[in-house]
Amino acid sequence: MYRLEYPINVQRLWSKEINNNPPDRKTIRSLMHKFEQTGSVLNIDPPGRPVSVTGQETKDEVSSILKEKPRTSLRQMSTDLNISMSSVRHIYKSLGFNPYIPRLIHELNEDDPDRRIEYCETFLSLLKDDSDLMYRVIWSDEAVFKLNGHINRHNSVYWATQNPNVTIDQTMQVEGLIVWAGIWYQDVIGPYFFETTVTSQSYIKMLDDYFYPLFCDVPDNESFSFMHDRAPAHYASIVRDWLDEKFPARWIGRRGALDWPARSPDLTPADFFSWGYLKDIVYQKKHRAQGGKSGSPRSPIP
Image 1 (cartoon, rainbow, N blue to C red):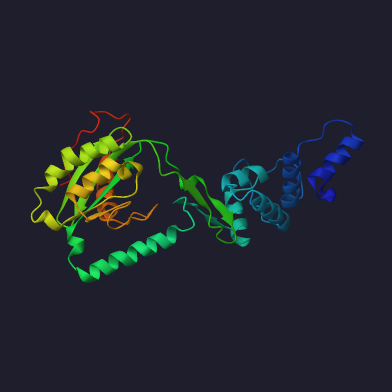
Image 2: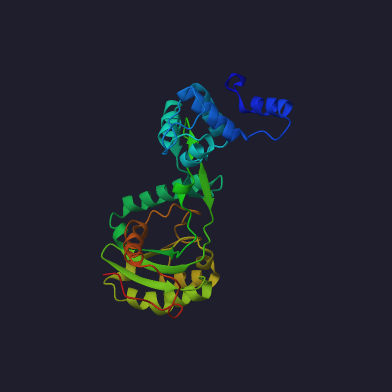
């Protein structure tokens, strides 16, 4: 059997000479490995983990499998080839294969990078003329608190000799408990909880009934600006009219005095502080279902 080199050759000869179903390739391969290591096919090894086999034939087989199926895990490779996990790791390393985890990204349009640069240059120009501008912006944002359904990137490992730069496109519209907050350099307004999809009606209600009364308590707020992103609910005419009235020529967003770029990376204080702080608190406990009254504000951020 060993002189035939490959399991397929053994199966062909078996069928021809013995005239019945041959052993499967895994069994034949196991016997060949045993003979290669011990010079015998007898079960003389004590029970335990599979022996470590890192010969050239095994390396070639591992390389072939990884090139065809780069997401093959260490455990699956160990099972398929009947060799130990440590041997698989050694072979992966000797072949120069490294694990690469895909990055989660939003789908981008071709001109999105240019719009981002244009926004940054415009804002920097405004900041040059008014160095206190950053202190007079209410940066607002929504975040989704998902109870399940997120992508676990660590279960999507790609093995390759060079980084394939694998990405996973994720939609920006996801279901879950939606939380709004506005932050400026001295304080936070919020959080406010939307427990259903944010619509133009629910958004304008939040701005009018919740946000604006609190904003009016901010000292010297006459020159403040308001920022929100390009979410569909934010672009409704009733919302833009409200902003034009409350923040004339002083709001940032789609069709605002300063246009917020589409599919922006959202590099705002809300991302640097509010959401991380809130999610650390929320995810200390497991939550099975959404409860409470829709649109009801909860405890403020201390």
